[in-house]
Amino acid sequence: MREHKIVVLGSMGSGKSTLVRAIAAGAVIDTDVHNSDRQGADKASTTVAMDYADIDLPNGDRLRLYGTPGQQRFDFLWPILLQGASGVVLLLDATRGTAIAELEAYLGVLLQHAAQVPAVIGVSRLDLAPQFDLEACAVRAGREGRWLPVVPLDARDREQGLCLMDVLMSEMEAGALVAAHG
Ligand SMILES: Nc1nc2c(ncn2[C@@H]2O[C@H](COP(=O)(O)OP(=O)(O)OP(=O)(O)O)[C@@H](O)[C@H]2O)c(=O)[nH]1
Ligand SMILES: [Mg+2]
View (cartoon, protein in one colour):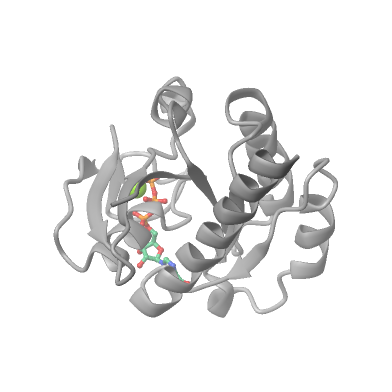
C-alpha cells in the first residue's frame, strides 16, 4: 500500500479545513477555535494547529491529509507541516481581491520549503466571485519554472475535492516518472 502525505496551504478562509472535512467525509481531527481575526476572514472558526485526516482511496492508496492554519502568525508551522510531503494543494480564495498577490506569496513558500514537491492550485469560492480572473492565475502559476495546474472547485463538495486530489496524484505520478527516467 502506498501512503501519501498531502499538505493543504492557503490564506485564511480559503477553505482548507472545509476541503479536508469534505474529502474525509467526517473522520477528521481539527484544531479549530472561535475566530477573533474577523479582518483575516469573516467566519466563525479558524485553525490554530492543523486539520488531519486519513483517507483510503478506491485504488488502495492512503492519503494522510494535513490542513495548515491560514493566519500569518502561524506561518512558522507551514515548513514543519511541509516536511516529508509528497504533494501540496495551494488553495486560493477567489473572493479576495488580493488572491493573485497571495498566490505569489505562497509560491515563494513552496519554492523555499517544497521546491521539488508536486503541487496543484485550487481556486475556491468562485460562485461568490464569478468575475475572478482564472486566466491570470494560470499565467502566474506557469511562471514558476514548473507548470502548476489550476483547478476551480467548491471546497465543500466531496466529489470536487476528490477530483482535485486526482489531479495532484497525476502530478505526483508524473514527477515520479521524471525522477526515475530523468
Ligand atoms: N460559497 C462557497 N463557500 C465556500 C467554498 N469553499 C469553501 N467555502 C466556505 O468558506 C469557508 C472556509 O472556511 P475554512 O474551511 O474554515 O477556511 P480555512 O482555509 O480552513 O481557514 P483558516 O483555518 O482560518 O486558515 C467555509 O465557511 C466554507 O463553507 C466555495 O467554493 N463556495
Ligand atoms: Mg482551517
